[in-house]
Image 1 (cartoon, rainbow, N blue to C red):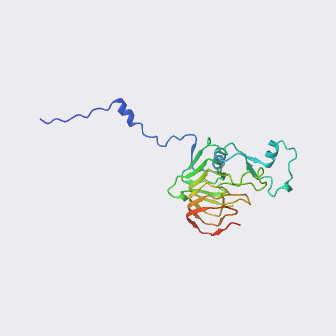
Image 2: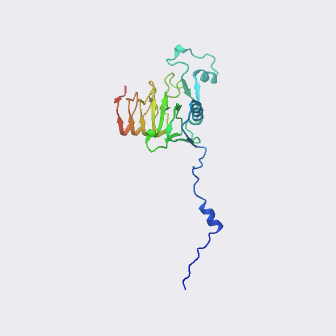
Image 3: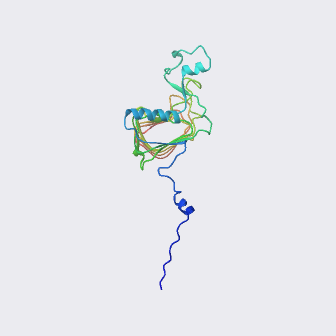
Length: 242
């Protein structure tokens, strides 16, 4: 006589184990934020505000800085080459590991400008860098010279602008992509549709890393100590250190 073994029924614990798969989509911690392309101008403005509040360093106008220092005699505009609408930063995130954030962008077009602050990483989630595009923008993701009115006014400095990165996106800023940084701030796997400006005026900066990047415009180095570039396509040439 032939007998067929009956499979044992799973226990309650074994059933629970089958449900322990990671959720899809995953549940991200507060330090990881996932964004989708805005559908209209209102959504774009709201998204830009959210990103600026979470990833950009706090900014001060020149007048704010002098007011905070209780200086009743604010210098006149003639004392500065830059207009009063230029900003500088002051932030508790500087040299602090308590604030770390990753911004993830799903494929699509993002017409937004924002500063990439300390301990911030930008990641495009497309297969190709051009799948996530910052288009119809003035600056796109960028880093200006910092401390414009508190350190070497009005030019500022980028010597301690560390710990930020961008990878796997395309950007087409009308004013070029400005990335005024000094080490630990790489650009990887990007397509830059205009110029890449690795300086801001004559602010002091100290180089960085660019890898697997296409630059359609010129690369303007400004005043630098060094830059390491690997596997890059500089289609518009380069302007060396002045």
